[in-house]
Amino acid sequence: MQLSITGKNLEITDSLKQYIEKKIKRLDRYLPNHILEGRVELAVESTRAAKDSQVAQVTLRTKKAVLRAEESSADMFASIDAVFDKMQRQIDRFKGKRSAKRGTEGIAEVAAAGAVIATAEEEETAEDQRQISRVKRFAMVPMDEEEAVEQMELLGHDFYVFYNANQSQINVVYRRKDGSYGLIQPDVA
Image (tube, rainbow, N blue to C red; front, side):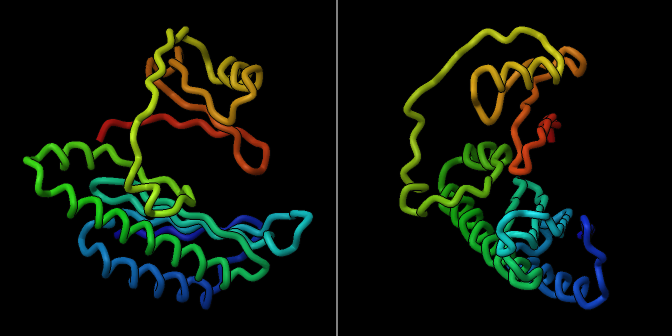
């Protein structure tokens, strides 16, 4: 597994790096030979509330899914502990879904290949009862990223799905917590 640890407004010390590596090894036991890449991003953000200034974000890429979690607190080590606890719960949920679906004849494996587990904080009972209640169709006009951000702002949404004329593919723009914008460009695995 490739592991990258980066810091924003923070110097990564040896003790911090060793602490993170120890936590990652613990997660690797739960998904042996499945984690391809791990990214840990630590940041010190200037917020009004000092209790949310130390942010830890972990992204794990496996063969079947991308698992991501983010936590913040007043202490970096507490943020790291919280984000790895959250990641372990996601791994347990991910493994549970895979084993529950194995009884079906290969269809579950195809469905699981496209699964991306978000960091939504929903109760697990509600998660097991998810159903698609509405299907929405709309015509996509080719546009660039700036036009998509403008459309998103006009609609008052936090994200906007559009056909990127520059990339010739479907993309998503979204508003980040810090007020900036993000762009998702999917790659077929």
